[in-house]
Length: 201
View 1 (cartoon, rainbow, N blue to C red):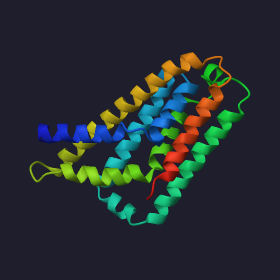
View 2 (view 1 turned 90 degrees about the vertical axis):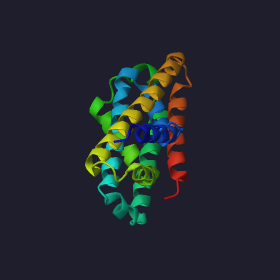
View 3 (view 1 turned 90 degrees about the horizontal axis):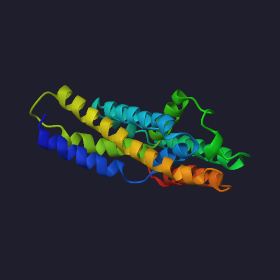
């Protein structure tokens, strides 16, 4: 694949992914609750969801899914409900979750939760539908180009959300012992739910 085109794709994809949204808010919320090292599972979950979106779009299934607007709406509201549930759970917690919650969620569950948040965001799929086809050319095989694009997208996804997680963990150090910690974590989950709810399909 042409390196210039791949660099342009990487720049475009990164600029879209770096914008704060439900994924970023979820990553920050998880990082505040758990250690940065453990929360990297969230970045892995988002990376795997990026892979799923890429496969759906580049295999042609994305166009088929886009035709079922009702299914996309249902997915979106499932994601909103999950994030609201996390917010309520954090708000009602009687202990400082920034301090003592490091062992309450397994790495695999954290990764699957991140995938659920990303895959229930219809805008992520629709954005992928618009971006990937722009960078497929007639030169070179379709499979090699598709694999290159998805691999680059996965690397960018992990890097961006890992950056959010590490940055949030530094904030978490200042929140340990604070009576506002639970409310701040809950607000990030609610913010993610609000952003996701506001996304039109």
